Length: 87
Image (tube, rainbow, N blue to C red; front, side):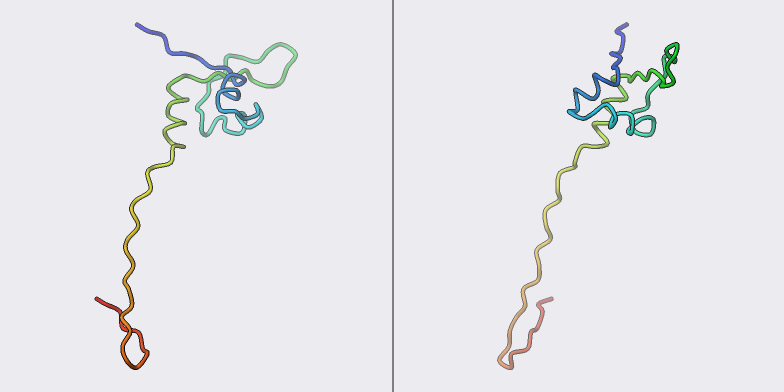
């Protein structure tokens, strides 16, 4: 059985090219972290991120392909300078 890679907040920040503060803002709503415990004398939790959570995050944030634009109806001008739309 293959073990899933575990990321630190610093590794996630470097991977995405953002600050560690941004990673903490994404935590816990978007990155689904787990806490490996609070270090003695420190108040901030030690978050870790599973590879599967990183993959889900990327999938949710990936921009879908843009649908083809719907062609616009062209106006048909008549002699009296009014516009009639083609149905």
